[in-house]
Length: 481
Ligand SMILES: Cc1cc2nc3c(=O)[nH]c(=O)nc-3n(C[C@H](O)[C@H](O)[C@H](O)COP(=O)(O)OP(=O)(O)OC[C@H]3O[C@@H](n4cnc5c(N)ncnc54)[C@H](O)[C@@H]3O)c2cc1C
Image (cartoon, rainbow, N blue to C red):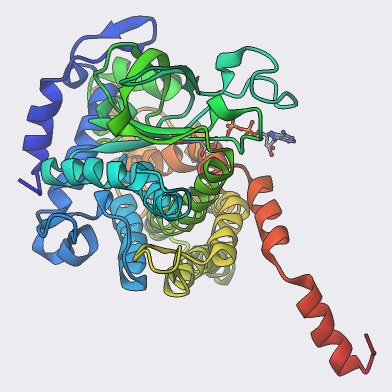
């Protein structure tokens, strides 16, 4: 059973008893709530993509751990080809879903944890990697959906962990003979309500004296003490109210659903604990996860989103009779340029990836190129949204509802006055689809997903050998020293 179908995943989820709240109410059945259901639908689609022979190399890989074909979502890359396929998986799932592959962050957390625990066992003589490998085998054999939690709500950003509320950073509240007790919380957990497990890794670089905050471990999502509070916004209300998905922007898979996850004295047995108190390695884990995640979440995944925006815009260009206007072609080309740079940096980051640490067999992408992908996406996504909004016109925010096409009074008026080269209905449908992208949540979501821009700027500056560049310039300019 190393590969599950979407239906098998759903059957598994139906058995889980979660503690999930949304808009003030407890969710008893994820499938019955129109918003939480989108997480099941999107995740099931990811499982089904793995069953489609045309996507086999992108979605699946033979695991050296269990000798069977497994989902790439639960496989740490073992070559640059693997990294390349990991990046392609980000592109494909975005193109097919128009929302997150909710197994993505977990996949990248698995990359970071595999690499760092290997280092720890080698250098510290610990058993973390052995434990992690056993856990990963179990995940692979059962094809479980893992969400990734780079923890912390953080509170006042100018305070260190423990300086204010000790639980603002996820921590080990108690060490016992049989395991640890976890406390704390995390915002923005993409699709965690529909996962089987969450891989918890540090969201801060803990210093000496901050050992309780240096923790990585795996928890089952149904565990006692875990509570989820789902996001809720205007699009959530619209999905609840409208009662007909076909009239929504992303009808099948909805917006990017995230939640807050709270750990209230959650017990984690030692065999599921992968870092506990080793501050230097906790920092290393954060960095290696970020290196992996920026390549995909900040790069190819958003190239897939941009494909959808570009496709919607080009359709509207044709409906509006703008396809021969040179200025419009220029604008769509600007959008394509941004998309290709993000995608290109992602592929290059994978191609230039390296084994890390040497001898481990685990591969991580090139950091500078991954950060460049994410930075281009941060800035460029707004550009893409700008041009799409310019071309589609004010109708993106002023359009009536497609339901007005069902009212005999308004139907003929809409059909007459909103018709372009495309029918009124086609134009409205595609404009609503575009509205979801450029007048919804995706601007801020794309900026902050995989960390805000300043994080990548710091990494790029820190990792660039400016001395080497100075020497090159001095050599040619004829300067000594
Ligand atoms: C749609 C979406 C989905 C996500 N999914 C996941 C997920 O599945 N798993 C996961 O682990 N994470 C997820 N994230 C989290 C994401 O990766 C970022 O880590 C997170 O959004 C950044 O934290 P924040 O939003 O609290 O912003 P902050 O980190 O607080 O940043 C806000 C601003 O404050 C600045 N800032 C912050 N701290 C300091 C400081 N000490 N000094 C100076 N300036 C500072 C930042 O540069 C930025 O300008 C998701 C985020 C989004 C938006």
